[in-house]
Image (tube, rainbow over all chains, first blue to last red; front, side, top):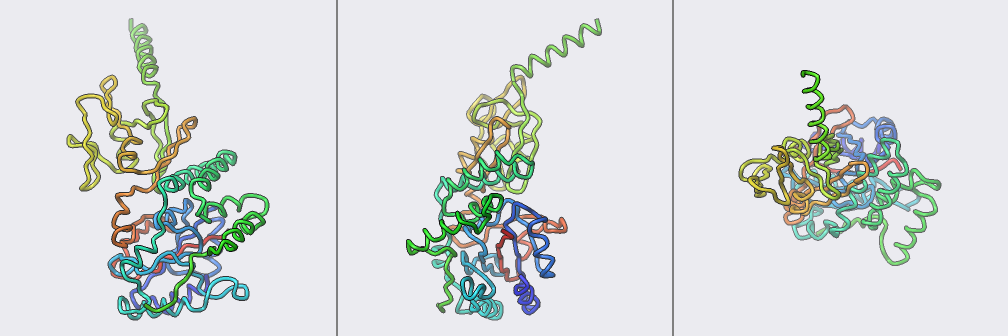
Length: 208
Length: 164
């Protein structure tokens, strides 16, 4: 988070904005202090219903989308840590330089994707998985109103309807014993990875 | 006589509400939480008064149909249909039927009268076909309404993260 703030300071004069949306049912209480500690001055949103993830078909956090001056997507659906964390376990130091390159050169940046590549990179949900969002939203409403039993019922439904969403699983696990990075999460993650899959949407730094 | 009339009036009201079996509902639609005083009781569908339709999803019932901006879905209003019925002179619009027509996902807790709707596929066509960023509107931490489209003319890096 502090890294994004420094990147923002560096690039904001070049017609550049960061919109950072916490996908947090716990709201201000959960996500607010993290924004505050980083002294963010870019646009900070707390998206309690994971609305933006649903709208852009993003399955995990962190995720990044590049949007140009006309509202066209230039890159989407990438696991975007600003720097390498935990001895290289997550993220890469290569992401920030390509953001810089795009802000400086716009459509001429070699890291901008063409329309076909953008289209192929948008995750496609099944009609069944589309129902996960209203189910998750219903669970969140019950959670906010103190009905944990019904919250669990609809969060479980959301996970069953859209098993590819890590956000729905981990937001739910947050409120259970073991937490969002506990045994259940580790087991699911290792299942994905041992089958050759990737937990984070892969980052492609290759030039076009 | 006056007393008698008012009792008769209450009985009439009770009868009408008995026939309609009116019940309240809460509708979750994007960032909205819309409380609706009266719906037409139905096991699987959400029927609301035309003015409440607009409060839910901005659709306006016009003679030509249910309309949102350029889009109009034809609705018969001179006789009952899947989309619209008249009971005791009051028109009722079927919100879930409209959602089904638009292939918009929804989930309900019937017992609690809670209805939750997903995003409207029509509003994401240009996203899937042309890579246009879907617009959204959300209050920031100071309560100021933020719209993605307000940033036209700037490059935007949209990031999602979570505390968990």
